[in-house]
Image (cartoon, rainbow, N blue to C red):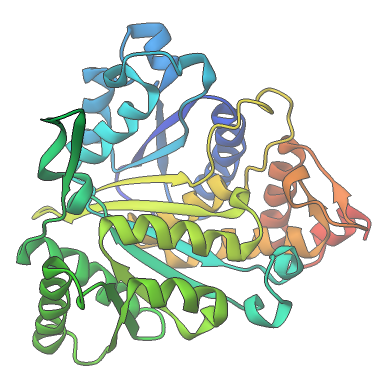
Length: 385
């Protein structure tokens, strides 16, 4: 691969709780890629969430927002914690993340649910149900019931109140997230399952009709199926390997992606990507983050699992920079380290070696060195298993 003329600009937002710890190990992996794969990266750092509120009185400053808009990709750790639970809603740490998504127009959320062979036994489902699982949920992120109007809580008299949220989608919103799903499916197994509730919701019927139209017009080479959301929830625990790419709306995507995450055995292993539209100059706004929270109860103790953030960086390589070979290399290194028996506390199994956050990061970098030399098994020898 040829080096880029100018470095790719990555904004790192470690955030709160364990965010700085997992980000530090991910930076080590990213710097290894920059130093060994002919791919130049430049890093800037910023504050988001509670730490930004403590420093500036807001969970995301305008200056940091401008940095995010100018960056080629944003890597985020985690936000929030009980320290800030009593703040006004508009300055809670999570509002910083929501502003990033809104201002960058990150409409497509990608959540893979991949089971590494070494962790198949960690799932609460039977080994044969989850072994080899590799699915991707594409969730529409900026529309639907979370943003629709009217919304609110109103007093309707006689001591009664009414809460209203509106589920609403347009053709354009459905088509743009559908294209993301179909384009990704072309690089996988060419299968998309579109999920809604067309049987009881007009918005679901529109979703099904528009996805069908898009498929017929542009993606006949991809197999398309449809499924009601409640059935999909059941099928994810009954036979998850029937799926390849699932595309769905904001509400159902929120629920189904959390369900799918638990098939893998640990939230500490799961990355995500939130993507915007590709612009005329080829640039695409994108934010990458682990799906786990800030885990303030273990922050600063060196026991957090950095692999979800490292795998989020691998997604960055794949989707923002079109460097699938580099992404595959990082994912292979993670898999080899797990095969060798290294485990942070959240994924510890009998007979495996407990490692710290830093030691897990070191193990991944060591394995990248071994893979670069055309060798395998370095992680296994280091782990002593």
